[in-house]
Image (tube, one colour):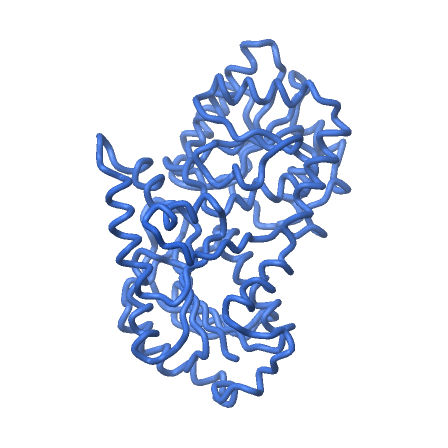
Length: 389
């Protein structure tokens, strides 16, 4: 079967959506299917990768979002889909590309919409004043869900929006983590000492896009609260975005190291495994991938309860808390009361419940496909890949 996945909000720093496409593609290939990914980029192109064909559609950058691009010409995508002849269609964007569900319905192609985020939480983070975010989200979700055969939610948190409107058929498909890359074995005492400096002994890490909805300054406020309690904490910031300049200014006044975008995933894994705790302040978090990678690295997480982190942070692995910096600092202090060996062991153990293999197997079941199917069984497989160039 040829499975075409159209994803928006894609860019050089969008680690979460890139991880999803790469691991889904590799899993679909291993199961004997033919994955194709349609994503926004700087130019039109087609590249054969180890996880499938990647078709790039020229698209504009989204202002203030670290190079993220968005496809807005839906007609062009529909024309491309006519050429690709998918046997199954997946769409990772319920904003600008939701009309692709009607295209699939009209052509008889079974379709799946991925829901990674909560629209109501996103609206509350972006809109000023008392907007009716819940009612607005419910209206949008009803109009979106009817266009697709299946709705897939990467978190139970995201699924709650569809349960609220009575859409009980939404399927929970948890995402995964690279357990071989993000591991406690990457703990590096020399790196840790270099990041801590001479005046700190508690290493905190935050790995977020530096945008307003991710609330990076809450991590800074948590650091300040901890320092006021006598904790010699230092915050390492991984990520880039429109607030990076602000974070670098704060780093001149406080024990903060801003690493910006770190392109090598192994370097990110080294930092995570060498930290004591991760702070994940974003509300309405979509994947929570960075938090999951932190857990896999043996580093517990303190995150916002108003996000997906409640799905993956629990028990000894960390806390999902409500409130502001004082609540985050309380949770950090509570975690530090636990023996380090135990909290690291429990964090890692919790992350092992999220292998990518489970994500792939669940998605194949959603598509009604067996892992033993061969790509050659599909008439679409006979088409030459070059036609998408």
